[in-house]
Length: 92
Image (cartoon, rainbow, N blue to C red; front, side, top):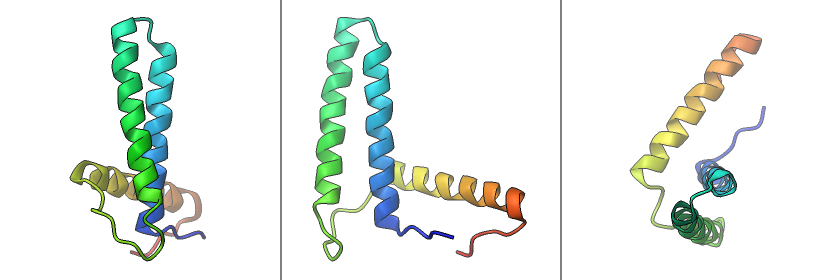
């Protein structure tokens, strides 16, 4: 089993945010919405870059409460899937 530390979970959440925004940009037909989404995509890329460049020993500002909630939900979902597939849950 691969145990991912919190920093990697934060980076994964940032990448997922970028992928979601990119998909929204591709699917929108409204030019104003596209500009707004592209601006948000740029900000998300900046956040990813800042989080990734802190290095293993660096301490950034930490994830926002919203991102922390997403991480907790992702862990719970992963635990639920694991418990349904092999009968064991990941230790906390």
